Amino acid sequence: MEFSLADLIREHAARQPDAPCLSFDGDTISFGEVHARSSRIANALRSGGLRAGDRVAVIARNCPAFYELALGCAKAGTVLVALNWRLSAREVRGILEDASPGLVIAGNEQRALLPESCPPLIELDTEYAPWRDEASPVDPRHSCNADETVAMLYTSGTTGLPKGVMISHRNLQFSARMARDVWGFSAQSVNLVGMPLFHIGGLGYGMMALSQGGHTVLLQAPVAEPILEAVRRYRVTHAFFVPTVIQSLVNVPGVDDMNLSSLERMIYGASPISETLLLRAMAVFGCSFSHAYGLTETSGTVVTLAPDDHDPGGAHAGRLSSCGKPVPWVELGLFDPHTGERVAQGDVGEIRVRSGMVMRGYWNKPEATADAVDTEGWLHTGDAASQDADGYIYIRDRFKDMIVSGAENVYPTEVENVIYEHPAVAETAVIGVPDERWGETVKAVVVTRPGTHVEPAELIAFTRARLAHYKCPTSVSFLDALPRSASGKILKRELRLKDWRAEKTG
Image (cartoon, rainbow, N blue to C red):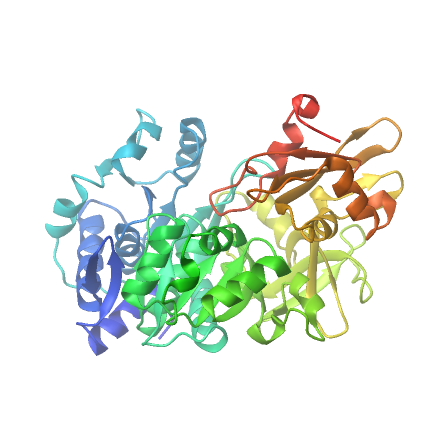
C-alpha cells in the first residue's frame, strides 16, 4: 500500500485509540478522537462539493484544527493550503488568487485579512466545530496515490512573489523516518510544537511524534514562559526552536532551578547556535542538541548536526558552525552556480539536493519549477556552503546575500560568527551597503545583551583581530531587535532597505 499521511492516524487510532495524541490550551484529545474528527472533516469537504485535488485554505494561529484539517484533507484527497497570518491583506489576497481554494477556514482575528470576494468561508471560532461535527465520522478511505499533493505551503517571497510549494504524501513519509531513525522519537515521546504551522518547521516537524504514536503538545506561539510550563506539565521529551527562542528560554528568571529533566533532545534551526548560547542551554536543559537545515522545497530537514558533534571546547568544536551532514536518504552536492560543475573540497558552492523529499514543484509555475529543479532532479537551493574532508556542511550564506567588496567575496555568516564571540552581542546581522570606492562595504547591525554596552569602534577592532580586514564591518548600528519572519529568520532585505543615516553608527 502506498504511504498516505492519513495512514498515520489510522494506524495509531487502531492500535491505541485512547492514547493522548494532541494537547492544546489544557485540553487533550486521543488518537481515536483525532481520527474521528479528521474523518468528519473529510466527509464535510466531500459533501460540500470539494473533490480530490481541490484546495482548502486555513489562516489562523496554531490550534488543533490544523491537525484535523491536514489529516482530513489527506482522507478526502484535497490539499491543505496553510496561510501566513502575519502577511498583509494584499499579500493574502494574492495567495488566495493563486491557490484558488474551494474553501477558506479563518480565525476570527484573521478574517479582516480576507478579501470581500473570498471563497466560501468558515469562521474557526464559531462555525468550524458545528460544520465538522454534522458530518459522518466514518473514514471515507480515499484511494491515495503517494505522489498526490497533500499540502501547499507558500514561500516567504524573499526572492519575488510567494510560490506555492506542492508537498506530496511521499515527501512527508520521510518525516517518519527522520523522527524514528535520526531524532529518537518513539510512542513514548512528547513533542512540543510552537513554530507556526503554516511553516514547514511547524507543520512538518509537528508530525514527528504523531508519526510514531507519541504525544504532541501544541502551543499557539513559541513564548518562553508557556514553553517552560508545558515542558514541566507534560514531561516534554523533544522540542524544536530557533536559537532566538532558546535565548529567551535561558534568560527566564529562575530557569536554572526548574525541573526540566524530561527533555531528551532539543532541535534548532534557521541559523547556527553560538557557542556561548549553546553552553548556557546545555547547562540549563541537560539534554542533547541537534541542528536542522532544510527548506520548504525539501519538505523539511535534509542536513543535521548530531548531538555528539555538539562539543564546545572539544577536538571538533569547530563543527558547531556547521549544519552537519546530509541524512542517509539525501544526496547533496556543492556546485558552481555559473558553470554547473562541482566545486573542490573546501570551496564555496551552491547546495543542491536530490531526494524523495524534494517537492513536486511550484503550483501553476512550471518555469519557476524548472529553474529550481533541474532535469537531473537536483534542487537548486541558492544557499552558499562549503564541505570539509569529513563531510560536514558549512553554510556561508544565500548567494544573493553575499557581499562583493572590491574584487573580494564576503560571506556575512562568517563575519556574524566572529561578532557573536563578543560578550556584549546578543544578535547580529551583517549586510552589504553601497560604497563609492568599493561598490559595497560591510555593515553590522547589532542587538546588545541586557546591561551591556559596546562602542562601534570596539566591535570593528574586535573583528579586525580575527578576520581579514576586507571582511570586517566599516560601520556598526544598534537596534533593540532584528526584523524576523514568522519562522524566526532574520529579514536582511528589510535591513538593506533601511535608511541608516539616522541611526547610531561607527
